[in-house]
Every structure is written in structure tokens, then in C-alpha cells.
Image (tube, rainbow, N blue to C red; front, side, top):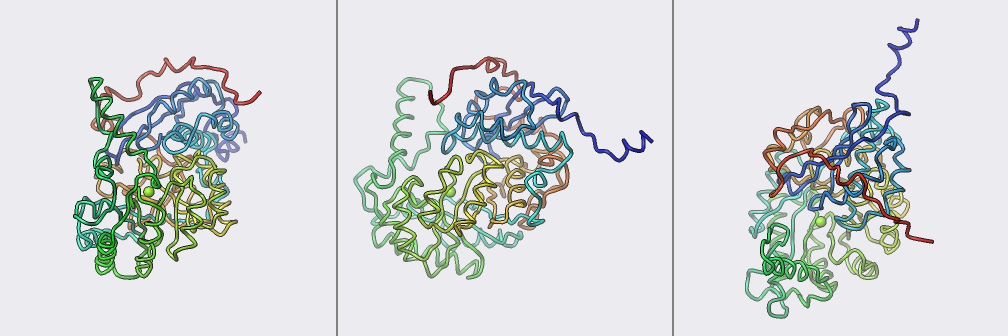
Length: 447
Ligand SMILES: [Mg+2]
């Protein structure tokens, strides 16, 4: 009788006695950008997988270790509320969010339940993917052919860049103070300065790229607008009029130039126009959306649901949260529900490994308000092999199908492969992080 009862009871662990014992990272590059993959270890042998946002430092997650050791990872919301003060907008949200993913993965594994089920169950079986397609100064026709190749792979939703970088190399397309464009041709992130002068040079590039759109003095000329209109016309000629095509990376141009471009391209029916100005400029977003019929989108750099509310009230059309900035799985589900109440659609931004992709897919399955999920690794042949346990390819015919396996559905990571793609200066993976065990300060933000 007892054996019969046990055979019908799924006991994957003793969840009430589960404790966090360690947090370690694997810092890799090329999948598609930089990723800090996370493991949270427990006293019962089960391991949770998380990931710090692309381009962010693993430090954002490791500094939370001392605040989590000894805790039960199944208390997801309680632990999130303890650590959420240590997150911030953009990449600064990466540590809190990455940890939150791993807590859900652990809770799912402890109870033997997939994450989407813990969120309330399915609205859909398959998650629609849109593939962002980078290109270094191609013609519209060339970009159109690249996008058409994506469609031939089964993708039903597309995104491309349209802005300063498509035209700035052509004389007469950009109006601006001499030298104002120069910093945008460099990327400080890839530099590894040695001398003090090299460090100052990197910092100067960082500062220059931190000049927000209203303050660069950069504008599109009529010739620039003509060429961008021609560019999207050439793209539409290749991909046809029907498939959704989102647009990103206008560059640091003014609100007024964003409006001029938006009006020019209305007849090509973009799915949305993304991050025309910094998301903090709520009134600019209100003006922008009221000035054009192109759906206006922002949100990939907003931490916590409260940051979305003013934009929803300002009347933008699409939000685009990144799970690895918002605070993670549960916060993004809440953001999708809140946006739905305001009549605003949600797409999900993602440019990381299969860990982040599956976390996004579970939210997308379990949230009614969902358009499409970003995928940035069509051209990374080893991306699927980072993980062990999910059917490959993870993205098939333009969709991800979540499995019924516990947690995120990932059994393990492919350490041998990870070792082949370490970030510069990194010597190994899952190395001890003892130096973070006792990090502590009196961090309360009120008295
Ligand atoms: Mg973007």
C-alpha cells in the first residue's frame, strides 16, 4: 500500500527543507553578445539556472550571494523583495533578474512543475519568435534579402535597424555639430585598456555615447529621410507587404526627427518603432505617439513594473520589456497584465542564451498579452548546444515550444562548450565565489 502510494506521488525533493548553498557564474561571449550564466546550488543536489543580462557584469548577481545563502529558493517573491533594491534600469537590473530566474527554475525542479504552470498555466502552446537582423550598412535590397531568408526559415515576424547608422556614411544625410557623430562609430565595451591614457580614452567614448538624444544636436536632412524611406521601400519590395517588420536603433536624434521619420514610413506599416528617445522622457513619448500612426514602442531598459506605468498612461502602443532587466519572470508577467489593462501590447526583448530564452518563453506562454519574443542568435550555430535537455533546435520554424519538464526545462549546461567561448580575461567556469559570502552592509533605504 505504501509503495503504491509512493508510486503515485511525485517527490522531486523536500521543498520545505531546500536551502541555497552557493551561487557561481560562467561568463561567455558570442551567444550572441556577452552572457553571465548563473547556477544556484542547493543542499539537495538540485541546481537552478539563471542569467545576467547581455552586456552586464556578473558582479550585479554575485553581490547578492550573501543575502541569499541559507534561504529557501522556493520563497521566490519574498527573496525578490529582499534583493530588488539592488537592481536598477538597463543592465543594472541584470543581477536581481538573473537570480529571480534561477529561483523559479529551482522551485519548479523542487516541486516537479514547469514554470509556466506555476504562473497560472497556458494561453498558447507555441511562442512566436521575431528575429532581429543586424547588418553593417547594407542596402535596403540586401537587408530585404536577408530578412526574406529568415522568412524561408519559418519566421513570421521580423526586426531590422533603421536610422543614423544606415545613412551617416553618405555625405549630406545628417545635420549636426562637427564631430558629434564620431563617438557612435566606436564601442567602449570591447576595449581592454591597460594604461591610464587608454582608460581615459575608453571613458571618454562612454561619456560621449551617454549624451541623450535631445542634447546631441543631430538631425536627419531631407536627403537622409529620402534614403531611409528608400531603404524600407526596398526591404518591403523583398519581403512583401504582409509580414510584421519592427524597426530599431534610430540613433541619438531628436524627438522632432523621430516624428519626421515616422511620418515618412507610415505607408510601409511598421510593426513598431523602438526607442526613438530615452524611455524616461514620458512627455516626448506622448507627443511622438500622437504625431504618427506608427505604433511606438519602448521598455527594454526599464526595471520593475512601476517604470512602465507612466508610459502606458502616455499612450504608447507597444512595450518591450527584457526579463533580465525588469526583475525577472514574475515582474514581467505583472507588466504584461498591467499593459493589457491599458490597451497596450507586449513584445519581449531578449538577446541572451537558451536560459533567458526559455524563461521568456514560459512567461510568453502564461501571459495573455503577448505579441512576439526576440531572438538574436539565428546565426550562432552553437547556441542550442549551450544547454542539455531541451529538444533541438529550440527555435523551430519561427516558434519555441515549451516542454512539460520541471522549471525552465534545462537539465544541465554544456561545460565543454562554454569553456570554448569564455569572455576575454576569464580563465574558467563555475569557479568559487567565496569572496562574496560575507558581503554585507546596512542597506535599508529609509529610517
Ligand atoms: Mg532595441
